[in-house]
Image (cartoon, rainbow, N blue to C red; front, side, top):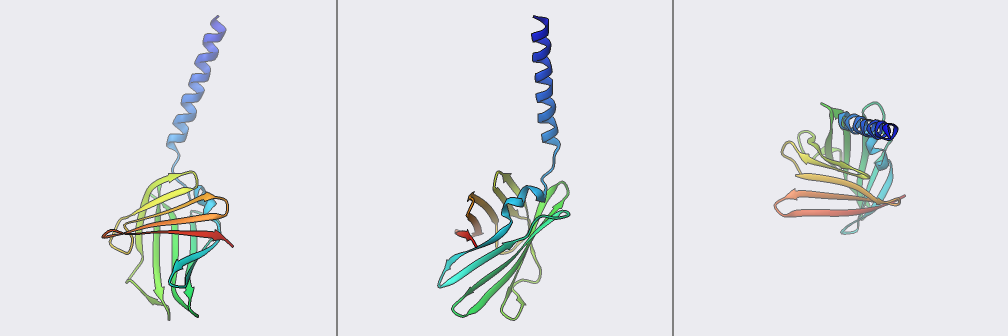
Length: 161
């Protein structure tokens, strides 16, 4: 019987070490690789939203976003997620036609939640978004959920292109 007790203790110790090692790991942009791809879908009023996420590399992942429809581009956006202070920070900046910035600078949001094929950020400063959540519930579907405050919320479902 001492062998079973030793084996049990060894397995328990190995599990504790694995859990402890996982707890010490910090979020990485590599955890967001599931976002990579070109996504598009309707957003109302004859508009289409496109999100084009590139592979995470050297501590960042980024997306070029474009809203088009009715024969024109109505908005362009740059979204960058970077590893900072053992966490993830999202910065977002939007431009109107003619590359006219909608705000003096980017809005900064910090990591709120990170799970399997889901990430959520919350505002660290004033801007268009209070929270911004991305998820991929299916392989061909990319969902954006935004809380703009004042009861304004949006859920946009995009499909792989």
